[in-house]
Image (cartoon, rainbow, N blue to C red; front, side, top):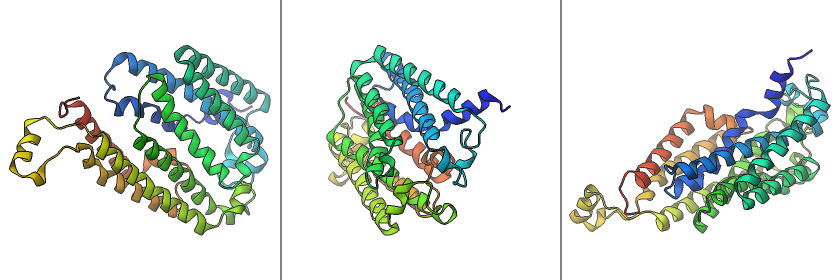
Length: 310
């Protein structure tokens, strides 16, 4: 008999929890990342979302077992490979769902409603909406948006409308990129592993990726323009005194080139067919790792190192 704990660990896909780190976005960008009380709330929201997301992965694997057996990679998943009984998988999914809702209910009522909506949306996705072209991309993107705003609800934070547009654009970029990469597997799987793929043309998904990639960096640029803190450190003020051309009152705009590079790099990976699993790419591609660390470091310095009057 297969090692059940090991198979359960595989089916809950902890590597996918990296996507849930977006819950910390509101805390980070509002300048409260070093607030211990607020950090604790967002951390528990992160834990709740991990349980919820894993529950949806299990349900999806149960329903997709037949199709997964035709997929060159997914055929090795515990249920598709027959190493994990369906009844045990159902029990784990129920326990994870209830645990996530319990944590959410004790954190924040709005977060509880949002997490409940996420679970219902993912159930609808698994039971049929994933087979509808365009709708499937919108649902995947909605999952990313819910993650970001879950973090905002938990700490009662306001996020700029420009950041909302950025989140939406990035979510659609990642979702369409995922579908574009999956198209490369059609010759191997005869297109039977996901019905919606047969309704997409490569040119259409290429246009989606390009459109949302452009929207992502442009909306971030607008966010940095309107939401940057005012510079007060002597070095910035000295530069401003030297020349009006060096006046810096939009410090976050320094991060725009990094964001553009990150999107260009990820788009290159999409067209190479390597973005089917975004969570793995974000953790293994050196270019994206460097861009992510540089972006995080610059934002941290600007928001937390005393350069602003906030």
